[in-house]
Image (cartoon, rainbow, N blue to C red; front, top):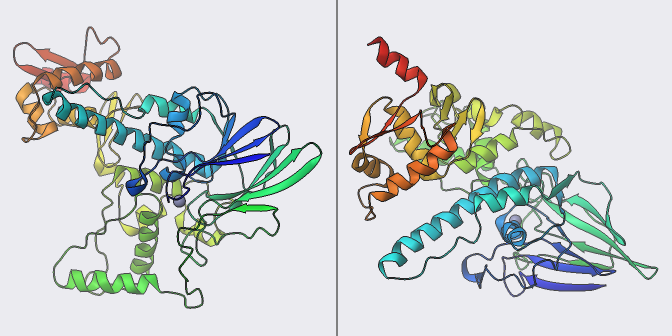
Length: 432
Ligand SMILES: [Zn+2]
């Protein structure tokens, strides 16, 4: 038996530990180094193919963000996690890939002018899609034999939806030892998320210690809803707007949960039915997961409050589907979630491609010059070349058109720009 620390040692982020039993190597977490801890995310400390399987404690990027890199470098095993962690991973890793791609594009735009060679993104959306195919999900409390001599069980860590401590029973040469990886541990008596469940036995414990030197006062139960209501009331009474920066996954849903409570109890006198906007596609997607099947993950009361879009509906927050959809069959654009469907199937778009489609769908049948598209999508500060419009249109056609060589939706207006034609809009044009 061997335990090796590859990350989050002398640092907070980049969690990555390796357990080796009977020659089988299992990683516990494979996180991205972030902020001050960032050493070199490109370097995994082991050769490709060295790791057999991965166990993921929770979906936060500092515990999961290098999984796509691992897969890109040839990992072929299973990634074990809870069902809700898997759901959150699917949105958070995609978001992470988007950031990696955007960062690389920005670097390359800068670097091109300075004559530097192009950099590759750490990983792409495609790498993430491949990664998600390696995931094997299970529920809290299940015992899973993942290889000869390695058994695992997830226990609720009360840190994030789906988060877990991992109990591991390792058997080698007739001896069994139990090692527990705490993952990140939550506080007690929190909104929505359950309190961490206790584990009573272990031979070894590997624990996080980020807030190890602070004492939480668990006896005094804070009244979050009252405190938040007071701030909202004071601000709205003065005619102001309240802007709350918030983590997209977890914290945003907690805020919506309190705002629902505040509205139901009528705690804001100045405007009891105040408007709420969630301005983040990732937060929108995460809130949908918080509205899904949470059986076994939260207390019944919390599940009741969250069931079927309750967070959105009862707070008056996003997404307000019927007014945020632009339907031009076979396309359906959702401007709240920033998604596009073709014949009911999601088309995966980059942010730039989404912005172009939105511009097109808002101007059906109208010829748009390259300059207009550049300005609308990239903004007036963009210093790049007009060619970038053509490059993106080409990629967009591959995603949208049945035959990209003979496009029927994104039409070239020679010597000028492009035009969006949908059967729907074409009919209307013909009627006129
Ligand atoms: Zn975490």
